[in-house]
Length: 195
Image (tube, rainbow, N blue to C red; front, top):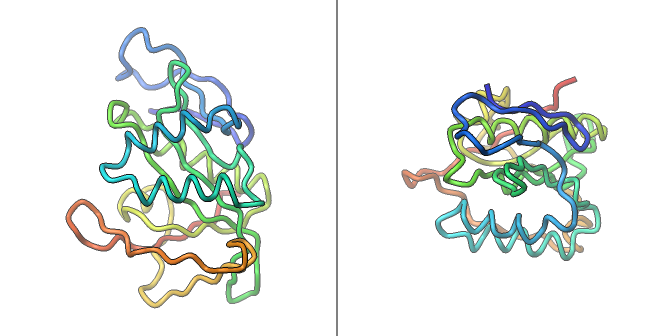
């Protein structure tokens, strides 16, 4: 069910049978710089109030020296991005010391394309991409049930993630706690990529 992907540019595959006829093949791949305007449009369509997400996208694409286009993973249908996940490469402090990792952010699927496995496909592809680049851990927050089904583990309420300040241009950015559709805080999650 859903789409299949690889760690690199991905391969074009057929999706599940629930796909409307005539929509063609679906690819899971890394973004290219020319995809950025379409990804920005996708962000506008995914979130009801996308100000925070657009702020993250605009800031990181303009200022993050470690972000490469292929760090944004896409599901592309009929030539347009319909699902996205962005990996911001970061060194993450663990009890064993600093390890290469990533912050997983801007995970979303266009409302007209939900229920087809595209969200799962783009996150799984992001994890494969991380593993292929030697990134040991992802830190993120989101809907716990979605990520638990992908093998991620919740992080304790008292968990403190330390990211190197250099990744933020010398200053740490602050973010409001995320709320889900019921107004509850979403939980921080972590995952090690599959081996």
